[in-house]
Length: 109
Image (tube, rainbow, N blue to C red; front, side, top):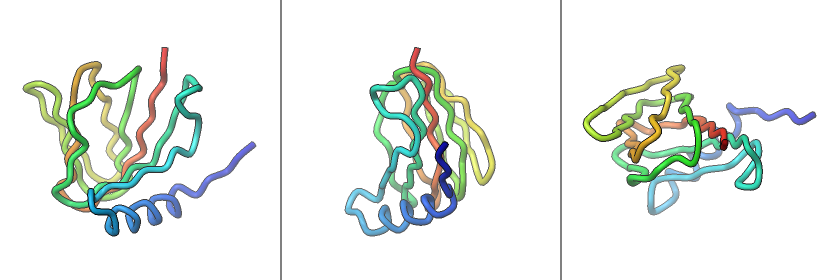
């Protein structure tokens, strides 16, 4: 059994994002590319974006802190502290409307 402090990981990732030129940082806490389930804590500073990409399976974003915008085609969703966004199975982007941390969960089929 493993135990993780998402609060501590979120704090560390946000600090790393604030010090990174791209304004983002990430740490996979469960799984990886070789496993069916992957959970990654991601941080983006305000105004920074994860460019358009496809998800490799079913995915959700749990907003830990801050505010983000998820855009897929013509549809847009905003999330803030505690919101869970289901990521559509199509190309999408994620933009930080303010300094934000979220937990990305991906289940590969």
